[in-house]
Length: 85
Image (cartoon, rainbow, N blue to C red; front, side, top):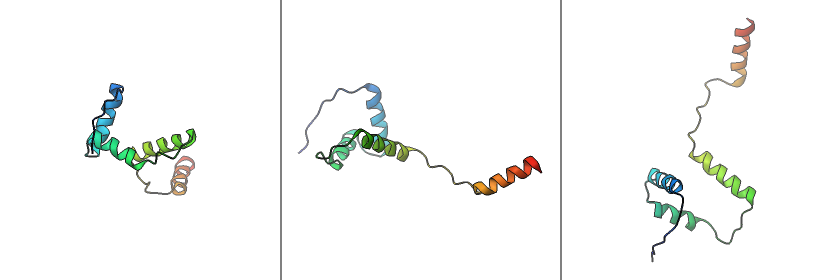
Protein backbone atom coordinates (compact mmCIF):
# COMPACT_ATOMS: atom_id res chain seq x y z
CA UNK A 1 0.00 0.00 0.00
CA UNK A 2 1.34 3.44 -0.91
CA UNK A 3 0.73 6.71 0.91
CA UNK A 4 1.52 10.36 0.23
CA UNK A 5 4.19 12.17 2.20
CA UNK A 6 4.86 15.90 2.45
CA UNK A 7 8.41 17.04 3.14
CA UNK A 8 9.99 20.46 3.55
CA UNK A 9 13.38 20.46 1.84
CA UNK A 10 15.62 23.16 0.39
CA UNK A 11 14.70 23.91 -3.22
CA UNK A 12 18.26 23.26 -4.42
CA UNK A 13 18.27 19.82 -2.80
CA UNK A 14 14.94 18.92 -4.40
CA UNK A 15 16.19 19.98 -7.83
CA UNK A 16 19.39 17.96 -7.40
CA UNK A 17 17.41 14.92 -6.28
CA UNK A 18 15.05 15.22 -9.27
CA UNK A 19 18.02 15.41 -11.67
CA UNK A 20 19.59 12.33 -10.08
CA UNK A 21 16.33 10.39 -10.29
CA UNK A 22 15.82 11.45 -13.92
CA UNK A 23 19.38 10.35 -14.78
CA UNK A 24 18.47 6.90 -13.42
CA UNK A 25 15.20 6.89 -15.38
CA UNK A 26 12.99 6.73 -12.29
CA UNK A 27 10.76 9.11 -10.36
CA UNK A 28 11.95 10.91 -7.25
CA UNK A 29 9.41 8.95 -5.22
CA UNK A 30 10.79 5.66 -6.54
CA UNK A 31 14.36 6.74 -5.85
CA UNK A 32 13.56 7.61 -2.22
CA UNK A 33 11.62 4.38 -1.79
CA UNK A 34 14.55 2.38 -3.18
CA UNK A 35 16.99 4.10 -0.81
CA UNK A 36 15.01 3.23 2.30
CA UNK A 37 14.12 -0.29 1.20
CA UNK A 38 17.82 -1.10 0.80
CA UNK A 39 18.88 0.33 4.16
CA UNK A 40 18.61 -1.69 7.34
CA UNK A 41 17.03 0.63 9.93
CA UNK A 42 18.48 -1.38 12.81
CA UNK A 43 22.05 -0.57 11.72
CA UNK A 44 23.62 2.49 13.34
CA UNK A 45 26.47 4.10 11.40
CA UNK A 46 29.31 6.11 12.92
CA UNK A 47 30.24 9.51 11.51
CA UNK A 48 33.28 8.06 9.75
CA UNK A 49 31.17 5.30 8.18
CA UNK A 50 28.65 7.84 6.92
CA UNK A 51 31.48 9.98 5.54
CA UNK A 52 32.97 6.95 3.77
CA UNK A 53 29.55 6.06 2.36
CA UNK A 54 29.07 9.60 1.01
CA UNK A 55 32.56 9.54 -0.50
CA UNK A 56 31.85 6.24 -2.26
CA UNK A 57 28.58 7.62 -3.64
CA UNK A 58 30.37 10.70 -4.97
CA UNK A 59 33.10 8.57 -6.54
CA UNK A 60 30.49 6.37 -8.22
CA UNK A 61 28.87 9.48 -9.73
CA UNK A 62 32.15 10.73 -11.20
CA UNK A 63 33.26 9.94 -14.72
CA UNK A 64 36.04 7.40 -14.83
CA UNK A 65 39.49 8.59 -15.84
CA UNK A 66 41.24 7.32 -18.92
CA UNK A 67 44.07 4.86 -18.47
CA UNK A 68 47.37 6.36 -19.64
CA UNK A 69 48.85 4.85 -22.78
CA UNK A 70 52.22 4.43 -21.11
CA UNK A 71 53.43 3.63 -17.62
CA UNK A 72 54.77 6.26 -15.27
CA UNK A 73 58.24 4.81 -15.65
CA UNK A 74 58.15 5.16 -19.45
CA UNK A 75 56.75 8.70 -19.20
CA UNK A 76 59.49 9.70 -16.72
CA UNK A 77 62.19 8.22 -18.93
CA UNK A 78 60.89 10.18 -21.95
CA UNK A 79 60.72 13.37 -19.91
CA UNK A 80 64.26 13.00 -18.60
CA UNK A 81 65.62 12.25 -22.09
CA UNK A 82 63.92 15.38 -23.44
CA UNK A 83 65.17 17.50 -20.56
CA UNK A 84 68.76 16.25 -20.39
CA UNK A 85 69.22 14.78 -23.86
